[in-house]
Amino acid sequence: MKFSKRIIPLSLVALCTCAGLSWGADAPAAPRPFGPTISAFGPAGTGFPVGKLGVLLNYQYCETDGIRKGSNEVNENVKLTKNVGVVKLRYGIIEGLDVRTATPLYDVYKKNNVTGKGEHLGWIGDTAIALHKVLMNQSKGSLFDLAVDVGLVVPTTGVSDKSVDFVGNAAWGTGGAVGLTYSTGSHRLDQEIHVYTFTEGSHSYRKPTYIRSTSAWGYAVNEYFDMGAESQFDWNASSEKDGKSQNDSKNEWYAGPKVAFKYKPGGFAAGLAAMFPFARWYEANTPSEGYRIELKLSKTFDLL
Image 1 (cartoon, helix red, strand yellow):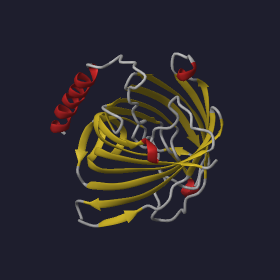
Image 2: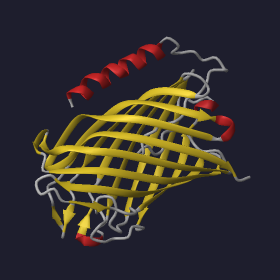
Image 3: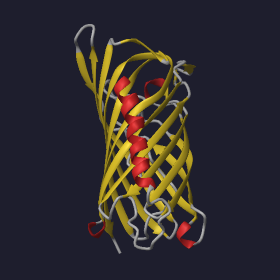
Image 4: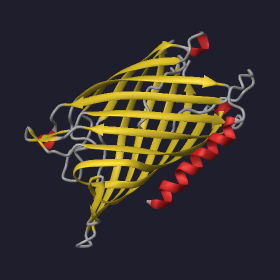
């Protein structure tokens, strides 16, 4: 990963340098950037228009670059290739209040590099449903946009010997989030922190409680194209099996550049991000992703 550790920071510096020339340009005609790209991004601080339905698809492709413990690689005995999709719906109920759902679909190819054998795992994960309430609105005079989420995870997965418990094991979950968005000229900054915890589900497995911090910066080059960068930090507690801790807590920080295309008249937007590891720590031997490619497609429909 020496290449990514060098090129990604340089890329971010270049993006910031180019965009910084027009920072603070608050002209009314300034183009506005599309929102964050990566799949985990939830509330931020903005709301969703009343009577509009948003259909979104997040897709993530990633490959592991070895088994790690602590911050070091211990072996390359197993390689995982992941294709993860998240189908999301958003609907504006009243001004400042919308409902959101997210359902993961995934396929993981697990290859044993020692024996050469491989298998496909996956199907559908558990669905998250959240109410999203805007508390502060920058367009109405507030310093920034501020919103909170209250969410519930419901059992929607089909549990089998091919399902991955960490993604979905027919368990219930609950959590919340707070998100902040600040816009100036053609720039947009987003920050969210959310926390979720789970009950024990199938296979006597309890998914770990986690805290996720996601940050994003977007700069609208013009009314059609954006550039920027995104960052995500995950803290996961230990999972449980048969009521006993598995001592498998982990912390991960990924970040990287992004680009986006938007077509406002058609209510369509697409974003692409490349995420690379900047810090990783694992309590137990864990396959760790060497990079993540993130794609987001968004289409808005007017139902009123």
